[in-house]
Image (cartoon, rainbow, N blue to C red; front, side):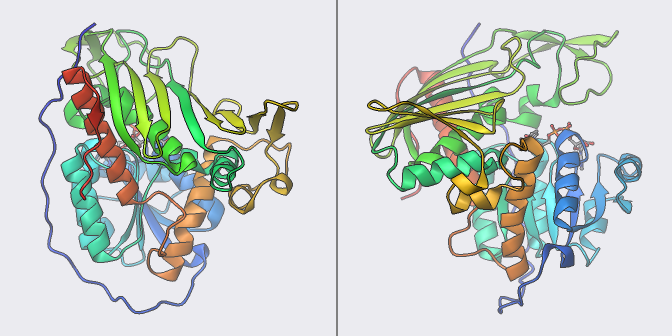
Length: 412
Ligand SMILES: NC(=O)c1ccc[n+]([C@@H]2O[C@H](COP(=O)([O-])OP(=O)(O)OC[C@H]3O[C@@H](n4cnc5c(N)ncnc54)[C@H](O)[C@@H]3O)[C@@H](O)[C@H]2O)c1
């Protein structure tokens, strides 16, 4: 086990901007809007399926090669694969591009998409470095295009409801915010994925890949930015065996031929947090917790009540009281506030899960696409939120390297 210094990585890209019209557009429905998806691996597939549920026209896919794009398009029933990003952007029917490629491609691809005047939905983390994510946030603001980061976990209906509970003061003052995000798919030294390589995944791995969701989510639910962190990152598997061929995300297959690789990114993180209102927090993040497939948990202790939620039981939220019996709220549009209701597609008792959050998030994003521009206060995570999470990540890396509390450096 050893501490991780952050490697020097990232790109710079300042593309020429193609200015687009800024006049008011008539409101259009998702079924009148065309999209394309970059990447058709684990999560690109979920994007395609969620877009279909909304009626958005998915005109094509871009993959790692023209052949892969064509074969994945065929498998997913999408009309075509594009041979290049240029070819995708030359398709005038495509108004929104979903970026679900590995992290190092987000910045160059999003630069080009925004320069071509398209709206963008980008997977998390927004970029490899905060310099890149800052550039993307500035570029998105300059172009006036709809820009969203796929922090889909916000869009479990009970997380939307929890945000409203806190905003309405139902928990009192937020004091303590705790939780974890545990997975086990990188438990063994033979487990491999592009996320393990800093130049593909970023200098932070467990924190960037899954911790980013938790940090974004708890800032969203509490309405409180994280202002300072004390982090301890650890790499328990300093050498892994990379299969000679390609590997699918979440794959547990063992390759016969492997190459030894040094690992420079963290398997686990334990982070103490301070929030803007003075609340304190603690989160543990791990990609090697045996048996935990995808367990994000949070608890918020307020001055009058508490709430707890677990992504592996997403249709229920525990609400804790001191002077009366505790409650379990089963997700039910009839029992949630307007934001929770808007994110729910099914009546109570008909369990909604991971894929449904994409439908709910895209529904909010495409309302703005239909209007032609971001609303004044978008109800979904934007590039500004994606950049903010990267700044929190910077503080985590510095804190772990230096062994001290570190403030999140936001521009004044
Ligand atoms: N929101 C979530 O819950 C969630 C979950 C998983 C992954 N993600 C994010 O989605 C992204 C992809 O992750 P994944 O798990 O789907 O990875 P993956 O490896 O399963 O898929 C990546 C895809 O990108 C394609 N690709 C590679 N190079 C490309 C290029 N030059 N141009 C176009 N496509 C290219 C690959 O062929 C593959 O289809 C990452 O940024 C990851 O952090 C988000």
